[in-house]
Length: 248
Image (tube, rainbow, N blue to C red; front, side):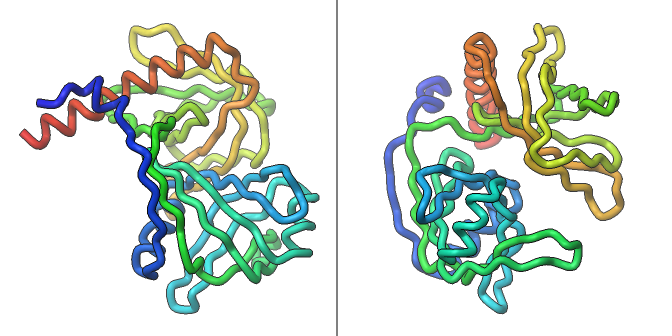
């Protein structure tokens, strides 16, 4: 059996340009379904902005992206009609360019961007921090205390050095961009890790019985960063052990 520790540390640089439509659609669906945060750059600015892939229309061959988290970034997208998006998903860096981008207003009054399906996706696997799924039996909890006085408890579903995805029972709404200090990551019989989080999205299922919360770390202190690094490495190794065991 391969050494899990060695396997966890081995991510070879491998770049590929995907141009076949079925593969492009499959990769975009993975980004959408995992609610991966997109790092967006636009002509006319050296800054990067945040967005999400909201929808993929395979019939009309266009995608829908969430409005950028910056008025300046939004104005540049409207002016230029172009942007480039990049994200990390399961150890892979995925990037693509969007042309002829249009800002549209949905029935809910919120602005989003519509662009033709990308003609190519750059797919780069390399040594990098990536999102790790957390098994239910690990019972890793996330405790949030937003300014409205609530205490929200959720189960950590995935974690990376960039942020946390958690599942909460019932319908929960938190404003995108809300920063919540001293959130607590808790594993049974372990000292909690205190982090500041920024809310990136909340999405409830159709019945309203469960909500997924996506967050990213902000103002991460060196001590917390070190504790997170140890935790993510431990989870990577555990994931590899379980996969090896499942293969027999």
